[in-house]
Length: 114
Image (cartoon, rainbow, N blue to C red; front, top):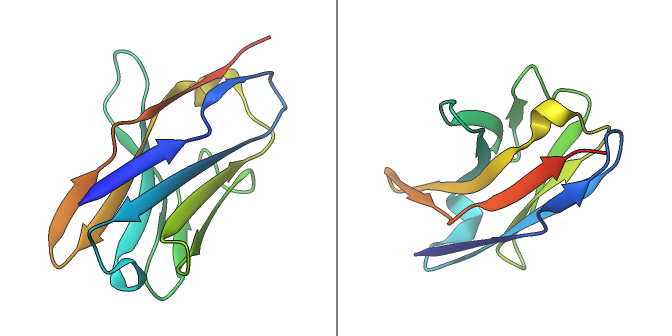
């Protein structure tokens, strides 16, 4: 199983960024996919999660600003980040839950700063 994130980088406060995670080695269409983040000195936290049935849930801190989506034809999950804030700065990790096991990507750095 391999999860490869891309799309991280530096963005100004109020700006937008889209993260992508390409999955291989799993039956993507029946996997629950999610995005987590970890800021320096903090625990990893859930940002957004999307079930195989396209039911989404979000951390309160990102509701109304971030959107998680998936393209089963491309085995890819996305995180659209709008109205970014400095406190969104973190390493963002892609997560897949498939047949009871958790899989993680290597992470991509997102920095929100002027």
